[in-house]
Amino acid sequence: SAKKANIRRELAEIQPRIDQTEAMKPESYDWDSLSAEIDACNAEIKKIDDRIGDMNRISNDRIAAANAKFEETRQMRNKLYDCIRIMDDIVNKAVTAENNRVRELNADRENKIAERANLERKLNLTQDRVAAIDNEINAAKSNIESIESKIGGKRQEWIDIDASTFTGNTTCPVCGQPLPESMIEESRKKFADEKQKRLEQIESEGGNMSRELEKYQSKIAELKTERAACKDDADDIAKEIERLDAIISGIKDVAPSPIDPTSLPDWVKAKHEHDELK
Image 1 (cartoon, rainbow, N blue to C red):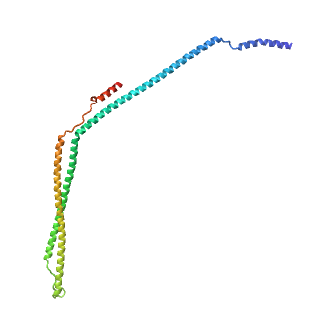
Image 2 (cartoon, rainbow, N blue to C red):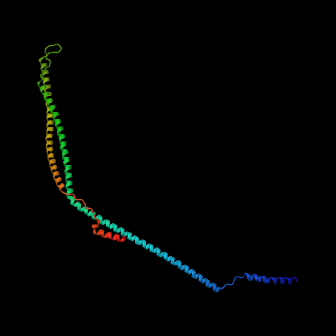
Image 3 (cartoon, rainbow, N blue to C red):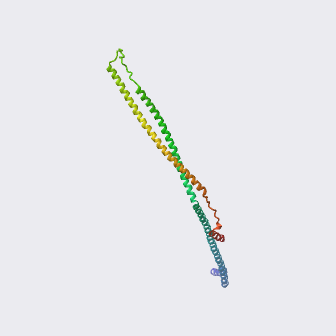
């Protein structure tokens, strides 16, 4: 009845479920062929790895080769620079040696030229002193002329005063009566005293002027002596300059010879090494 119907229904559903379950089962594999395929893949992967390793080795080799080439180039460049420096040093030493040789040859001439220059400076100083002495002498002469003129004036003044006589009044200016002899004598004495005092003053002033005149005359004599000595020195210096000029003109001035690097064995050797490196 109903129970049986349910049982039959459940039995009818069992086969479809079995089929469904069977369909859902995974596909069965051929494990041997799968293992062989995996081995083939692994072999291919190894080949790829080997190729990558080879490529890395090639890259490393190329980097090493490039580094080696760079180092070789750097060393060669340094050697080239060393050769150039050595070549320059050789030429510079040759130039220095040539200049020293010429300097030694020209030393005597240069010494004579220096000696002449010193003498010329000394001559100029001596000539300047002669000119200064002339100015001092002229100034002293001008002072002497002025003093002599003053002395002449004092001399004439002394003569005029010495020749002067008493001209005082002998009569009273008020009443016209003759003055007492005592008063007249007192006036004469006063006149004589003043006259003598003035004459003595003129003589004193004249004496001072004469001494000043002698001082300038003595100064001129000293200056003339100094001038003569300076003139003799100037003449001697001028003669010595002429003598040196004759000597200097007879000494040939030697100029340095140009340096030809190809005439220097060490330079040629360094140049050869330089060219080989290039």
